[in-house]
Image (cartoon, rainbow, N blue to C red; front, side, top):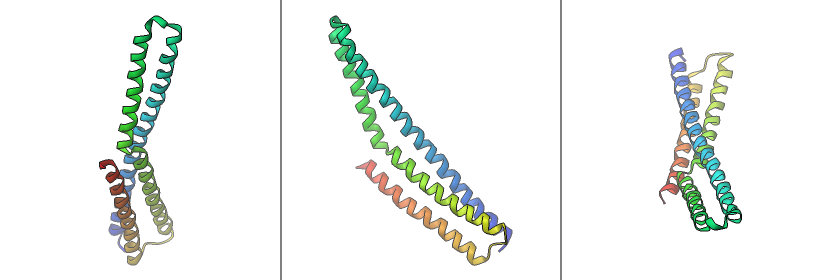
Length: 147
């Protein structure tokens, strides 16, 4: 196998690894940010609700603030579920690590010798299988978003 073919394979897998790393980090941030905001809104709602014990003359305003914070928490929960950020993050990390495993294997083999033509084809097919099954799973997650 020529170095050019070897480099093309490495470029392909490196680009896919980077893509899945970036996407998984984006979905991880979305998921974590939603969770933190939801925790804060829930705590704030409980604190505001409890303040009614200290400020009985403000009961209507307090009830309204509780309504606002719980409504925001509900809306955020619904939005986060529609985004499926956690599922996408986990899926993208699985693909990322599967591609990293293939890359590590290629690096290990090529540290001893050059890849043969059939090995190059095998690695390319493995990468395609990983990406193909990833696309199918991504489609299933997207179908959940759309339904």
